[in-house]
Image 1 (cartoon, rainbow, N blue to C red):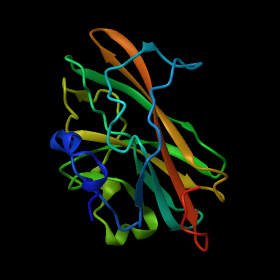
Image 2: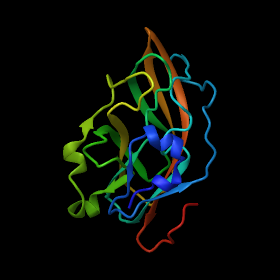
Image 3: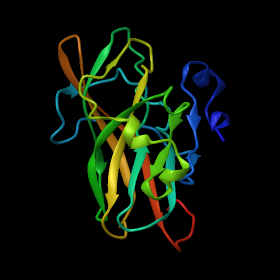
Length: 203
């Protein structure tokens, strides 16, 4: 099942497809989207090259029936470069990492490898999925996004469940270089994990 109906037709004309995975992830559209102002500890100047209305940037993604020790992958908002110049990604980081999650790193996948944009992946359901970890590449530094393009890769956060999650993972900062200057942007996103036996909700 794909989620094309949840994104405007205009956006989808240029955007990669989104795919649902066997980890029973769901995309819930309707959260507000914002590019936050400069935050403490951010690198470079406030940027605006990345579109606020990127795929997955106005949504909640959830994985259900998780257990302690599971590893999960969650797609970050797509790198939709709306500017007239290419950008080079320096780093990404999830800004709110509550107790119960240990971030293992950030990875990238080609849209063509996952038949669109893979929303999430869980190690416990990996036998029913394509080998996401094997196909993905560690790190995002050096990834080039051409002008007015999504590029050919998107980023994911890899995390391990070390305890019952205290809250959701939230928001992401992207640091990139353009024309010799370093910029940063923050985008709104939310990733929820529900443990075995918990209600299937997004709060």
